[in-house]
Image (cartoon, rainbow, N blue to C red):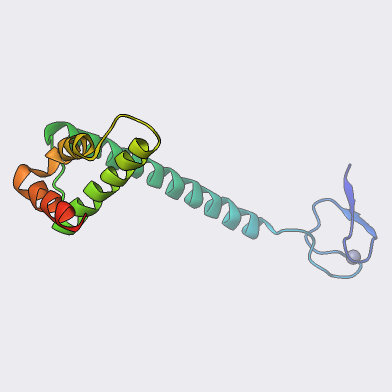
Length: 135
Ligand SMILES: [Zn+2]
């Protein structure tokens, strides 16, 4: 096929014609625009690939850090946070006890205290004392 239809006046014009000889309207997307879109597409793809590889790199660096440093440098939880965790554990345990399980308050507190061991004894003792002074 060596002819195409003009998009504006519907006359048959040569395939290669950039401008319709009948109505003088430019035909289709010009080579310049095609080139520009092509370059834009390549930039977008390259940019996307760059982001993906950076993310992968960050992930592998992160896992390497995790391997060399056993404990993540996290802020110590406040007394309030430890108390909340203990209270949540106790509430949970007591709910089980109420449901007819054998757990009593003392058993529950032992279990919950051991779950707070990760905070250090001095830290969780304060929380436990506070809990039992209010319950
Ligand atoms: Zn035309």
